[in-house]
Image (cartoon, rainbow, N blue to C red; front, side):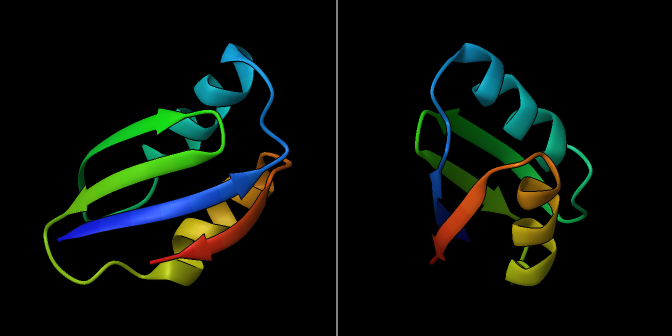
Length: 67
């Protein structure tokens, strides 16, 4: 299943690295691609959007949408 997460507050490569690090802690994610403002996630099944949102927001970014 593919999920796209829209993120605000990301401005540079360090931001991308921080979001990648956060996503590595979320169970059920097979792979992901992160660029400024967006993360595309491949998961094994239905992804818990609240867990994804929490992981990213713990890094200091705002999740605008998960879908």
